Length: 355
Image (cartoon, rainbow, N blue to C red; front, side, top):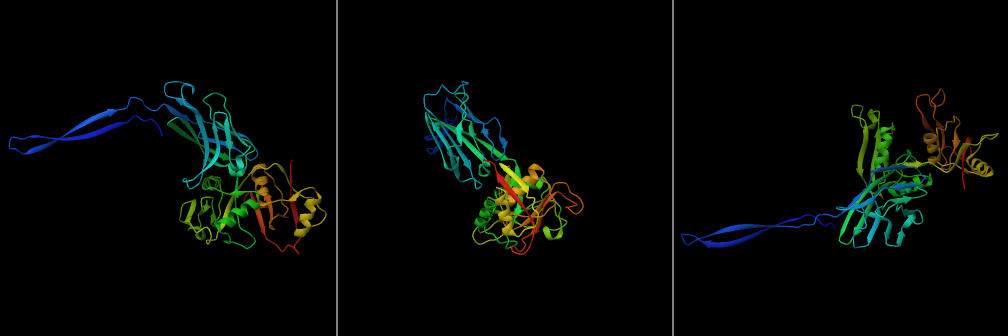
């Protein structure tokens, strides 16, 4: 609760005699004004911070008093609380709390977050070993006695958004299955802001997919008849919010840098799916996931014109330099499909994590 400058209007009614023995009501307004205004001010020097998976980042937050430049003039202990704002803006996830010498971190932030405390009024939060789930908006709240103030900082991650549907085909995932599908492919379900940024960067996809807020949307850069009509304007088409258990769509996933090596395995023969899995294991690696091929393509410029198996049973190949017979018109991760695992033969993409 902030100590605010306030004004109180009090209406006082009284009666006084009138020459014709009737009475008229008069209203007097009394002004009462508080002398002290707000003392505590919390500010974030930057509204957006950019980082990537595996990195470290500082979310800026400092607090001041109105008449002093330092934080030491208060008589109460300072309590600093960091929370993460969720997509519905009604719930907050606890991240970190500090008061005096007491410190507490929560959930998957445990052991990864602490205050910078470069000065006595510094409430900035350091997040180490960033994971995909750390993306989002954070609130810094400073409380001193009866006063408090807040500031919000957005943490953006460098990465790539990609559409995903399972072997079963188009529109087969409810919201919860969509979340798991992204996690299985080394990614998380994308937010609207991430999809919007991807659309601005040229992502065009005609199938509707779940987003992290429970909405269903899809990005169109080249309007055409099957995708909202050819006379419509480019944009992110919004289907609205649907039943998370019963409604079924595709999903848009988001992934970022990885700590490892993504590569096409040089092998003397083409392989079935099971042979591909074993070939990566023999090479000290795992068969790569869809999120990893998209991250290698988008963030590392990986280019290979050989179709290869991935962990979900799909066959794809990444093209960063469009050329004849290898995605001649656009840079893209080309999708061959979900071939028969026992009889179709392809190469394989592997991933070896760094320790």
